[in-house]
Image (cartoon, rainbow, N blue to C red; front, top):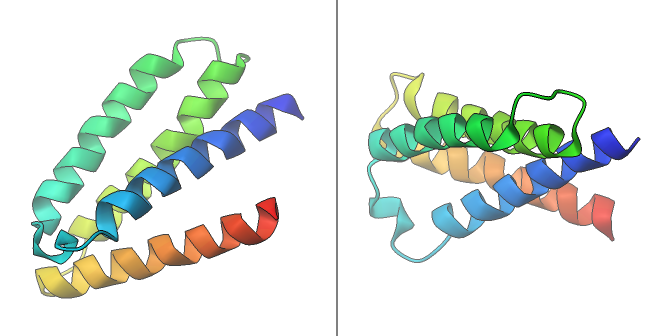
Length: 106
C-alpha cells in the first residue's frame, strides 16, 4: 500500500508542476516542441533520481512523476495538429488530472 501511495504522490507532484508551468499567464506562447523536449529530459532525470531498487518508495515516487512527464511529452508531439491546438489539449488534460486529484484528496 505504501508503494502505491508513493507513486500517487509522484503523480500529484508532477501534475502540480505541469499545472503551474502550463496554466500561468503567457504559457500559451511557449513552443509545444520545446515543452515536449523538457518533459523528455525530466523523464531521464526522474529515472535517475528513482534509483535501481523497484521495491523502494523512492523508486515508486519517481515512477509516478515519470509517467506524467511521459504523457505530457507524448501529448505535445504526437499529433499533426497546429501547435496551439496541441498546447490547448494538453492544458485541458492537465486541468482534468488536477480536478481528479483535488477530488481524491479532499
